Image (cartoon, rainbow, N blue to C red; front, side):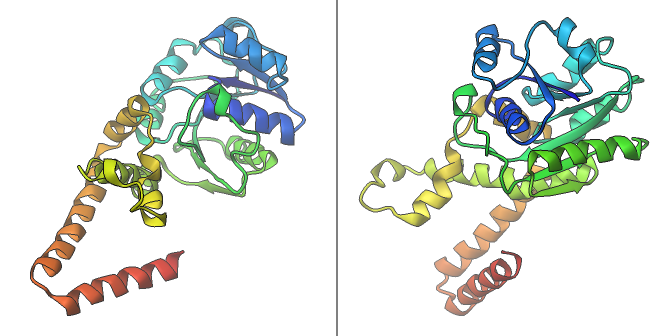
Length: 275
């Protein structure tokens, strides 16, 4: 099978490396900056590169690894190139906006949204890894009417690549959960290090500072798109977080030790239960 990886940054190149490492599929690759494509070819990360007109019609599966707001338009603009009955997917961290826009189109291929759940605080081809997705989840978000055999084919590819878990759900549930498991954590980390005390942390910080602040290392351009494209779900999580912070503040200001203890015990209980 020919698998085409479009966009050879951190995620795209890691997908290509994982395909080469764990499967026998032919990996085609393309990047907007041609020097990156040529380097990937020279280093054996991909088997072949070239123009979009040459590569897209040959792909049984195409994986689009662009910033969120570029994905749907690219697929629509190049709709005539995709192989009939092939699978076109993406790796974006939000799904509703992309999937609901593309489900309106009458394609002769099948778009199935996907999200390989892994990343790093750094970006770009140089930081890609062939084990980035070890122990990671692969989330698949087909829209209604997508043939089961196409969904199974994409899930099967993820399993071949070595993802530890595959999940099939709808785009809205994906985005609701990602707002909680990923996006709110980045909002919290960035808010945390905006403290005027942050520059003075050296000598006073240990694991707690490191754990909370880690994901403040962020690609601002990409995450701005992700936050805004998922604003309804993310704002609900921010509201919940602010509400809980205010409860803690109230207990501390008023010296309400019993209630403060109960809140911390409840947080500990929930964490012990859910992991």
